[in-house]
View (cartoon, rainbow, N blue to C red):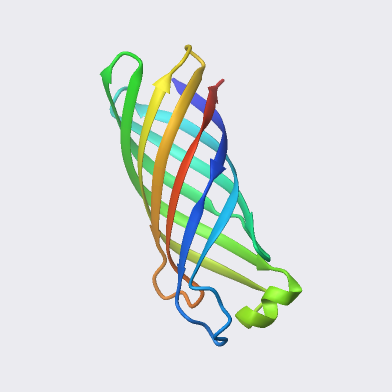
Length: 158
């Protein structure tokens, strides 16, 4: 049995940067957006494959990651679900012309590792409230080395 979720998340992303070529490059910044997510149950009650496509924007940049995770769900009570997961994240960052001068490049592609913790409350069989925190580590990257992404949203299951 598979479940598809479309998440309308108000995402707040904190980016931790190394200093680039310019001292004007931000060390931390906030991005906002939403995520479309597909989930497929691999082992009922034990293992879920999740593919998420967030769309995030902020001051002079647009991020479009692709996250692939294996999720371990746990349902201690009928209406509550707790889950943890790990996977990979691939991201394309695009900078506007003003930000390009600061960063020294117009775009950046990165690959990293991702972990997540989530708590969902079932409102109806198809509607959930979800709070989650994603943490990503991007090794060997110049502009972004780590991301912490708390999010809260409404989830609809098809």
